[in-house]
View 1 (cartoon, rainbow, N blue to C red):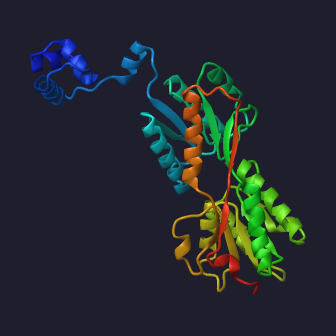
View 2 (view 1 turned 45 degrees about the horizontal axis):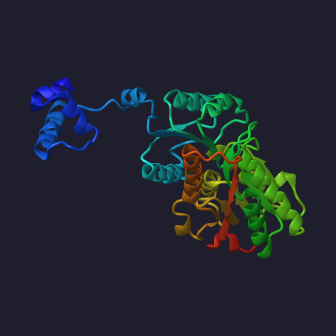
View 3 (view 1 turned 90 degrees about the horizontal axis):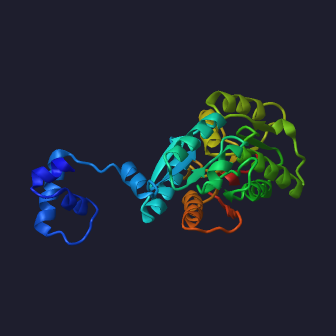
Length: 328
């Protein structure tokens, strides 16, 4: 600031008034100060300023599974828009479905004095957050709940969505329905499996464990499942993909098949509507998920001390064609 003041020919106090948007600075003087700032490449140290004022850093933390997944990219964008309206920036990190990495990121953000934390949890143990929450850092879990603490949570209707998918396939004559999903240790995968079972019961379809594959989706694992489930004397005639990543691997595995089985994906994904036939999906508004979680977080930031809330957002079936294919 001394360098800026010297170059602009003003006092340090005048520089301070300009950079903090204080009144009573002549426009010509302010313009001269801003030109000096630009010339010298001066940037405010927001961390130092906020520590001096005893205020926060104007940031929130967001931990997701993988920022490269379009689902989480859209979630991040929705959170950013809400944060911007509250004058905050978003620090984002990927846990890579690793609970140790999740904890490392959360505590790193807390050490940077973020105003609040949004977490898509990778693990089931979150007691490490209790001291931070008691110290006044609000935490909201989204897409999945916390494992061992009570906290604000925003979810989607995983069970109801899979029940609807089974009912839709049953309506079109399917009795041999396969279910491919992520590891059962993941909350959303487990809940969607519950919905699949309930959907079978409601539609009079015997639940067949051999038609269920629950593991981390890769091209190899899904390809192996397709070869096992869709061949032989009594193959599955329809498949429910437990999330968008499973759906993409499934479509690749079926790329050279003479005829695709009926298919419904839980989660929409890019270009699903342009395939032949277009992929029917259980859709939910990812942006709404991010907005709801961010709104809840900022309510806490602004002093809301009510009991922890659980918000469950609706899902709906989008019938595009693949889920309406009759059994061969």
